[in-house]
Image (cartoon, rainbow, N blue to C red):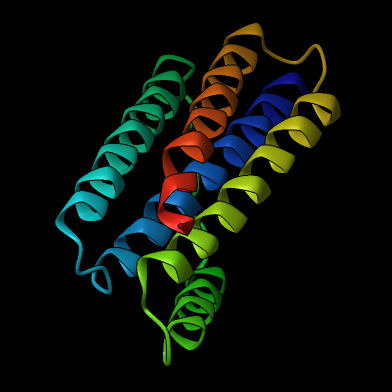
Length: 147
């Protein structure tokens, strides 16, 4: 595979990880009634939006036009999963649990993506490292809502 294709593929894996988190928060935020929890989720969403902008800026600088959000099927699957999981229980505890599961999945993706794309782009490695650290921090911020 050509170098630009490898970079584009790596960028898309990072971007889709971030976009999944943003969509999850958008879908789940509507179910939250606790103002402090809504505020926490908004802060997390803002952090993910900053990382998404970094990916978009990288794409623009590298003249990559193939940056892709998740496809409609993935978005529908995520929306359905969130809605069926909260149909009978939209407590802070349940929502925090769902967010933590998603965050752990995002962390796992970060680790695998970095390994799978070793040596492709130092800049993308740095964005991925920031995403990884951000998600690790989000775990600590979500844990109190399990109580």
